[in-house]
Structure formats: C-alpha cells, structure tokens
Length: 111
Image 1: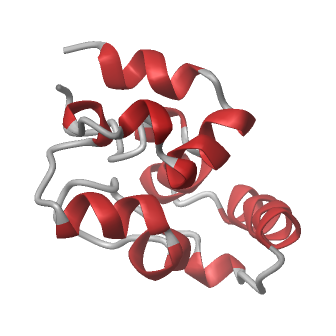
Image 2: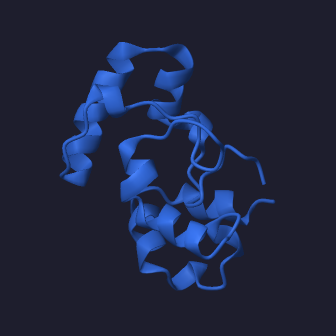
C-alpha cells in the first residue's frame, strides 16, 4: 500500500493540509483550518495545517497527530492501515469517516 494513504484510507496526496504543506500555500491553510474547525467542532488554526502524511515521519496536523481516533487505534494495534484489521467493516470509528467519504474503503481494499 502506498505510504501516502492514511490509516483510515484517506489519500494524503489529495488532502488540503498535505497540498498546503507541499506548496507552502497560506491561503489553502486558512481555508482548510476554517473548514476543519467547523467540521470537527474544534479550533484549528492555519499554523496547524501542516502535514507530510499520516503514516510517514514528519509534521502532522493537530487532528492527525492527536485527535484522530482511527489513527490512534491503528497505531495501538500496530496495523499498517485499517484495511488489514479484521474489524474494519464494523468499526464505528472508521464508519464515521467513511460516511463522509465512501472512497476510503476502496483505498483500504487496494493493495
């Protein structure tokens, strides 16, 4: 599996935080911080929108680094991604993310 697919199946290369970091795009950081603050009901600042990928070494957004329950679970279980977890289909943590982005399951099933 590609390293830039997150534990949850999110394609990091399509993530606005990754793109903003890669391109040093302050406008995209501001837009993403506003949207993610609203979606997560948690204050996220543009300065926190820096990420090099969920499963690679380097900087992470505050959400990916410390708030993402899916990432915490996969790391605790020492799973490459949720795609190898036998509980993937019934997982309530992953289910929340899949409800917002059904492509995640397809990304997890691809090897």
